[in-house]
Amino acid sequence: MSTVDVVPLVDEGLGNSAYLVDLGDGRALVVDVSLDLRAARRAAGRRGLRLAFAADTHLHADFVSGARQLAVTDGARVLASAAGHREYTHDGLHDGDETDLGGLRLRALFTPGHTHEHLSFLLLDGDAPVGVFTGGSLIVGAAARTDLVDPARTGELARHQYASLRRLATLPDEVAVWPTHGAGSFCSAPPGARRTSTIGTEKATNTLLRAENEDAFAAALLESLGSFPPYFRELADTNRRGVVLPGDPTLPRLDVDRVRALCAGGAVVVDARPAADFAAGHLPGALSNPLRPAFASWLGWLVPSGRPIVVVRGADQDPAEIAWQAVKIGRTDLAGELHGGLDAWTAAGHPVRRTPVVTPAGIGRRPVLDVRQDGEFAAGHLPGARHRELGSLDPRELPKEPLVVMCGHGERAMSAASLLEQAGHREVAVLAGGPVDWARATGNPLVTGT
Image 1: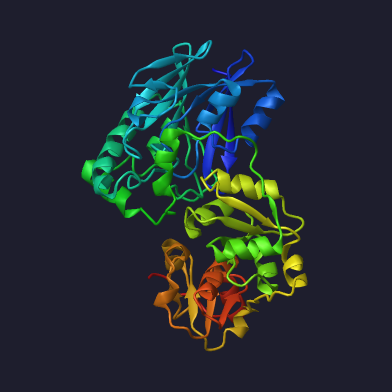
Image 2: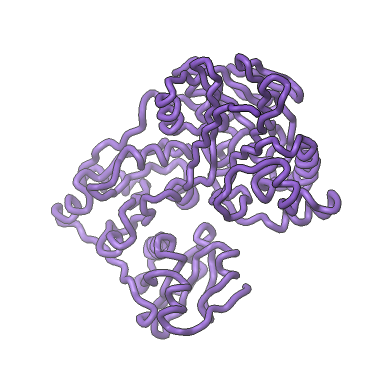
């Protein structure tokens, strides 16, 4: 049995996994690694490894690939699909091409579906298949979405995905399945703790692999598609060009006058403090996006690309973490941070805005707006609640009346309240907690369905 050391590098916020493979000779392969290379470098450093190969299964839509960065800074050899037409030096691979890793081998398998140029990589120890890096093809309990390349090609790519999964299912049952997308990803990964699997387990448990035929597979896959952040439409081209950073991203310090000037010119103020701190006082017009694992996804969803970003953070929050979270999804337009935070703003005599937070008993007769995802809302919501997903919230569609916004815990609700405030809504409150907390506090049942 093979003892190949494969280390998952999980990004819980994006719901993605990269992988580091110890090649046994002081070198390492990384697969589907993002531009935020800190975890990969730590894992390699602990093992005394040099990052010698960087393989990308597809032109990622949810993060900026770190492959070109590794090529420039580490001399890594980049392995990727020839059909992706990347505009930088790489090994453009076709179906069946193999790369000698020094004892181990990596075989490219053309598995289109999630994208038109998608490859899976079969890792072989001698002639024995050890595992397969499936990217956005076969994932644990599902298959990744097919509507990111071109809406007009969604159905076509779903049928390609069917064929790709059937091909992967012909591998031996004991072969490990190492997908990129997992729980928390907007690429149609189901909830759950498992991020890796085996071919045998997927054949036994993955309902899409047991689909009766191509039509049934396509119907089931397309029915599962939810919304996704608009920045997904931008990153395939970004990754085709490749990105190289001149150095680690930073948040330059900005004084109050500079922040005011930037805002007058169209900059977006992103307040990364906890929702409770934002509620207690924030810059008028600021967007609440608390620093947490999902920070990057919501930044890409709620802040239009091309607009400079000014950050307000708490003194205990790491500015480097905020900068990396932004850069790994392609948001390199970071103007900087308000030096001194909210205290500096108020010391300069400028006003702040506050957002009330209410308990279930404090809702009263006010209408409730639930901004969770469709599936969350259908699973259980307050009677009479209106529903708009945060990512598609248009404040112009809502009357400017007293309103209580809610989500599962409060973070997304505070983001929604900040968007409503930007649009001139002045009687917006946020519910502390989520629907389960409301049901527990009031003793009333939730409503299911849409």
